[in-house]
Structure formats: structure tokens, C-alpha cells
Length: 349
Image 1: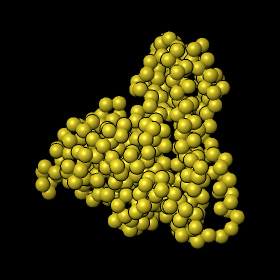
Image 2 (image 1 turned 90 degrees about the vertical axis):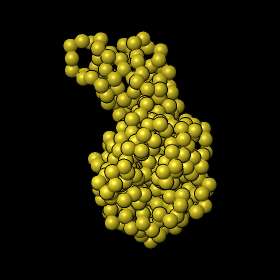
Image 3 (image 1 turned 180 degrees about the vertical axis):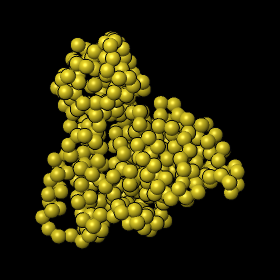
Image 4 (image 1 turned 30 degrees about the horizontal axis):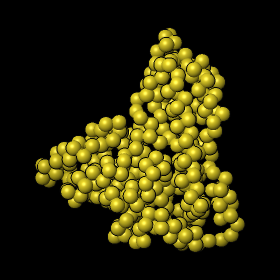
């Protein structure tokens, strides 16, 4: 009953097997390994982007921060939702890697920016000449930090606003596959066809041990990203271990299968929670993350039984057993129905 995070789940056996194979021989370092050539070709095919520049790093924070640094100047501000991952969970890494660019937080609805709010935020900046921040990239998190998913139409509308001000757009896709499966669209429809310029394409949360891809649809950014990756200490010498993971992830659509499994597990969980009296939801769960509330007594039963998840609002310590506490639950690819059913039994009491 481990719903703490999809980061907490195991790497997929096929990924581990690929790592073992990569360890059997020698390979050139720093991304010159033959596996990386296959990764680059496969990602370009998947995204229908034959000219795209493709790179690998080990963490989502590096993927987001170095991408944004490539798309911005130190005197810029980066526009993102109030609940964006780059704001809530990256310890000011974007500010660090950009050399000082700030974040402008755009009010959101269930963690999703609206075109009107984004336009208002953009209009408020670059209005004080040399004294204020200049307009920089727009960064969109999909799946959002609240488990909601931007539709293709919503992504396109935000990108259209950005383009009106000649601003690049970045997609934080740590859970890219989960969003894609939820929408039922193609990778190109969710990215460059909608107007996205750069993508952090996640693997770690979806069955890999630790690898993320960075994709620039305009290769003019390639050399600067390479320099920033090296200078930022994220160019692996034994790069083949990143390449092996990503190639296994992309082979035979493993990345989509894992996302389908985690999304399906979350659907099973949500369906069961909706059948329990008193359970409330903070947001409509669109992918593999759910925020729901139930009684303190139910939470204590779960914790006593060893369930792992985060209390989002409220405290487990308290006298009133009926007080509703909100939880954040994230399903990963390895979640099975028996564990979910046991979790639901304990919520129900």
C-alpha cells in the first residue's frame, strides 16, 4: 500500500536488464555511446520531429532547470502556475541555473494556468524598463502538481499567448506519459504542434531508475544546452547507463504501458474511494495522482497497517476521529489491485 510517490516504486525489470547489458562491455563516454544514437532516433520518431535536439540527464530538476536556463536570460522572469513543480519542489534550482532569472507565479485553477491569467501576468512585466524583470519563458507542468492534466486545446491556448509576446514555452513532463495516456493524443500533438519549444520528458517516475530526456524542437538551442549541462555538472561520463535506461523505456512502448498501468491503478483507487461515504476530492484526478479526504480514524487505520502516503491537509495527531484530513496519493506502474483493495478496506473501516 505504497502511495507516497511514483518515485518510490521499483524500476521496471526491462530497464534493469538493459542496465546489466550495458555493463557487459566498454562504450565511449559523455553521450558518444551507440545506445544514445538509438535513443535520439527513437525520440525523434516518437515526436515526429526529425530535427529535434535530444539530450539525457539523470534528474527532473536538471532537465527543467538547464532547459529553462537555455531559454532565458538572467534578467528574465519565467512564467509558471502558482503550483508549478519548478516553484514548489526544486529548491530554487531554476533561479540558480539561470543565473538569477526569477519566477512569476500565475494564478491557477486546480493548478492549471488560464490564458487570461497568463496574459495578465505577462502584461505586468517588462513594464519598468531597465528597473524590472524582462519577459522570459512560459513553463507548463503536465501532469500538474495537483494531478490535473492540461488538454491539448488548453496547452495550445497558453502557447498562443506566449507566442504573441515572442516568448518560448517549456513543458515540464516529469509525468509526460501519464498525461499523454490520459489525453489519448500523440506526443507531437501535446508538444510542438501545440506550440511547445522544449520538453522535459520524464522516465524516473514511470519505471526508470533515473533518467530524463530534454528535447528542443529547434536545434539552435543544442550547443548552449550542451555547454550548460557540462558547466552544471550534469554530463555523465558513463553516459551509456542513462542511454540504456531510456532506450529500454522507449522499446516496444514500455513507457506507455507503464503509464497505462499507473493511470489504471489510480482509476481503481478513485472508483473505490467514491463509493465510500464521506470521502471528498480536492481536484478531479486526471492521471495517476489523487487528492482526497476522509476521517482521521481512517487515516490512523491505514498508518497502523503500514500504508505509505502523504497527509496533505491536517494532522494525524488530534482528538476528533471524524475530522477530515486530506491525503495525496500517487500510483506507480507496479501497483496491484490487491493492495488498492486493502487500502480501500481500511479507509472504509
